[in-house]
Length: 479
Image (cartoon, rainbow, N blue to C red; front, side, top):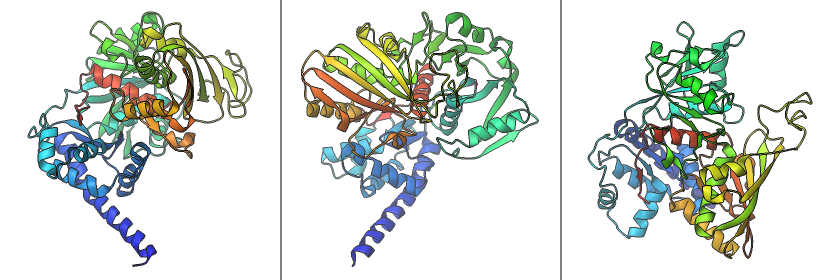
């Protein structure tokens, strides 16, 4: 057989195995509330090519491509176990199986997943009503994620969005913005508009569109919405007095702000301090995208090496509050064209880290540079540690944490000389450590952390929502 025929036949075989996997993944999802993934990349509702790409992506973590010939038998066996609701990482499960040196897939899975074997979809949380107040960049991505999770174990139920009515065809335009996105691509599914009832139906999720000028004027119970978590994406109200306006609305139990909160409002970075969420905290903040990117990595460094002091420089994509061309802006320098300039500006992210990680209070300074890209940013952590290390030792530690540490959903790791910012569009991690860029000189360590400041942050917000709703699916394999 020629080399040409050999490679083509191998591809056809892998494609056929991916096609065999698709109905199994779908059945696990719809009948058992089991979400399957490969290092955070969900396999549900993916094409055969997407599944193969996810297996290829695993080489960024394991340094070798994940063979679908190894994962298909695992998925086939999972389909026979009548599993309860869970989130299962197939790559990690496969690594655990190989490390066990077992040849019996069924016996291994029954032991590894003993808590959910035979539970047949049980464990799905009671639905939690969620309202999006504002429907901009973050609001639409939150909608995409929640709609995508609607039939899984997450328990989050997107019921409505609240916006100020625009001129012209407002409802159709908002539906179109949800359907098409210049950065994140087309919506995965079907979107219909119900003009008569002012609603958007996305993959069967009925989303009421409510027009209002102020939070307190809305009575959500009129729409059958009760004890809702309102996610404020506007950033207009960031203190207790302003955000409390939402609590004056009938049908609201809690408010989550997608911007740094002021005063005594708790800034939550999921994975670091989400345990601070309690029934006495009706007003919460999910902090900022940059704070979410920095804090998990900083916690790992603080816990393992100790941080004496440091500086964080963020290279951040431009945002909606900047001007396309030079024009008046209340902020310094931000009036200059975002698409033509690098713009030096301040950031409160370094101080905000201390809100989630008090042991770093007063230890970090920070600044930011806005650059002419629409999405994906980078945080550069320049840290003076309390003990010496080497680049190899530090990268090994961070890579291991990204695979099996308690913050593996927040901190990802990559070791490639070819990646650039667009390669991280759609990353669900709060931050991705670029191992090749790491610099270590004794006690000084410089880390480069990529982050999708839109999608990665939105994934963190959804994790906070799941925790509020007590609907976080059990994750396997156990770490």
